[in-house]
Each structure stands twice: as C-alpha cells, then as structure tokens.
Amino acid sequence: MKISENTRLLALRAEKELADIFYEIDEVARFRTERLLDIYKENRVSEGLFAASTGYGYGDRGRDTIDKIAAEVMGAPAGFMRPSILCGTHAIAIGLFALLRPGDVMLSITGSPYDTLHSVVGMDRADGSGSLVDFGVEYAQVPLGADGGIDFEGVAAAFERYKGRIKVVFLQRSKGYVDRKTLSVKEIGEAAAFAHSHLENEHYVVLDNCYGEFCEKSEPCSVGVDLMIGSLIKNPGGGLADIGGYLVGSERAVELAGYRLSCPGVGLEVGASLGQNRNLLRGLFYAPHTTAQALKTAHLCAYIFGELGYTVNPSPFEKRYDIIQTVHLESPEGLVEFCRGIQSASPVDAFVSPEPWEMPGYDDNVVMAAGAFVGGSSIELSADGPMRAPYIAFMQGGLTYESSRLAVMAAADRCGKR
Ligand SMILES: *Cc1c(COP(=O)(O)O)cnc(C)c1O
Image (tube, rainbow, N blue to C red):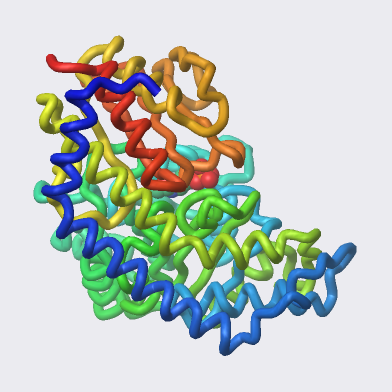
C-alpha cells in the first residue's frame, strides 16, 4: 500500500497520544466480554444450539437461547435477536407498531428520528402507506437543547400539552446522519427517569440504540428504557451476523413486540432460524471486541484529520458513546477523496473508486465507501456523506483496527495538507 512516510509517522504519534484512551476502550471490551462469557456459560451454549430449524421452527432451542442471551447481555428482563428482522429500520418499526394504538401520541425527545424512520412514522401526514400516522397515531417531537442534550423544559411542556395520551417517548442514542451530540447511557437514564416520574398514564420509553451497543460498560435498559432496539449489521452483530436485529426490554414491551414480529397469538414461538444461530452467537461474542476496533479507528481518524486542519466531531480525546466519526471536508473533492481513500484499503472492492450518486430518499447526491463482506454492513469500515456544504463525511466501523488504520491513513494522504 502506498502511504506517505509523513502520514505513517502521524499515525504513530496519534497512537502514542491516544494510548490512555485505547486502554480505556480495551477495558470496556474486557468487562463486556467477561460478562458475556458468564452469560454464555449460564445458558449452556453448545454445538447443539447451532442446528438449523425450518418451517415453523417450533422448539428451536438455539433461537430461544439466543433471545434470552440477547436480553441478558443488554441488561434487560426480556428480548429477542432474530435473523427474521431485516434491518434496523424494520426492527424499530416492529417496536413502534407493537406499542402504539390509534389516538396515542409518539413523542420523540431527541428531535427528528433517523431518516429512514420518517416514512415509518409518517411524521405529519397520512399518505396511505400504512405508516403510524396513517393508523391514527399522532407524532410530535422536541428538538435537542442548545447544549446538545435533552431539553427537559421543552419535554415537560410537551408532556403537559399531550397529557394522558403519550404512549411512547422515543429517543435516538446516536447522532445518525446529523452532526449532533450522541447521548451517554447516563443521559438516557436521566431522560427515562424524567418520563417515568412525569407521565401518569401507561407509557414506554423506546430507544433507537443503533451504533451505541458495547461502547460503554452497560446498556440503557439498566437505567429505565422499556424497549431498546438495534441492528445486527452494526455493533451487536460483531461483523459476523449476516442479517438480523434485536429488541430487548420489559416483559410486556417484548411480548407485544413479539406479536408484531409474527402476529398476535403466535409471538416468539415461531421462526425458523435457517442456520443463522451460529453466526448470531459468534457475532455477539465478537461484538465487544469489534466495537472496540471501531472506536479506536474513530479516535485515530479524529486525531489525524484534526492535525490536518479539519473540523472533526467528536474531537480526538472526547469520550465516545457511539462509533460514528464526522470529518468536515469542506469541498466536494475533499469528501469524494476521503471516501476513495477509505475504499482503497477495504478488504472487499478495494479496486473500485466511489462516485457521488443519486440515492432514493436523499435530496442531494451521496458518495459512499463500503468495502464490506456483508452487504451494507456499517460495523465494517464505511464512510459516506451527502454532497452539500460543509461536505461532511460520516465514517464508522472497522472489523480490525490494523486494517482500518490503513484506510484512515490512505484517506489522509488523499486529503493532504490544506
Ligand atoms: C442505521 C440506523 C438506523 C436504521 O438502520 P438500517 O439498518 O439502516 O435500517 C436507525 N437509526 C440509527 C441511529 C441508525 O444509525
């Protein structure tokens, strides 16, 4: 690989200065791995659980054990983790449709939800697609405050306004494709406690946990979240799950989500695992380690591009609560070159050169680097950004730190000194 001596030296300097942070990241991975091994042992994980079921999948012990393990690893009383969940958006849609009924209000307290959820919710207009709003659910949102945290005054006002009708208080942990702050488990806990102490009617605190799993020693279900949802082609699949998602939380929320995954009366009893049990258990086993690789890659990227004079978020030494790193490339060429650099050091499709292109659902052209073994996987190193000022690249993932650092260096060489 052709990487300049200057960039190689810059990476070595970064690693020296980030040593304490890398140590802390490893400490989280060690802690989570120890707990995970205890849980695998208590649940008697063995070869027999890897057997594939077909048809209804009645009595698939592997599937049922994975459901239980997923809940325990995430610190929740109940849950399921299944290959029949197609992506993160699907997982979140299952959770929302499970809990909300006509006339109920869904209140998002972290501003607008992730782009792909806009169609699921229907936001402000019934368009006949079968969105939540189409089914008579009302949607409202409270933007994040000026400091990037929850605007508790704004939330209290919304609670008052929709008194007795709020069924779901919705939060998104990660920044997604907005250059906002990511919430820590502690901050999510404060928001959940606020909701539980202010709302008198039956309600659920629901969290889009995508990209947040395994970044900290605990997950938000231990601090009052009733239903927490994510995708297996992000952190908790460890880069090894081929497909899938999870929903974990309270017994009642998970029971209802099970009825929505399949149908009322059937719930979680049905669902052939089709040979995916091994991948799911192996992926979850790798997840603390893989997430650590991605976190280190994000810190390294922030350091190197910060040194090159670019605005980066989070900053190199800031504590992370998700795996996303943004770099403001400030020109269309810069954004494209960044993505080409990342692509050039990927294990798959390294020989292709990304071009900005029209994407369904986006107003601007988008450029993407994705050289992954699993289609669309973003726990594998990937970068993308809309072609509009300030030309922000969103970079995330990295199965191995060794390979991802090369990709960051290749990008740095292309974006050079400004
Ligand atoms: C990725 C993501 C989603 C949706 O997941 P898909 O698998 O792309 O459908 C939802 N919310 C956040 C914050 C995400 O990062």
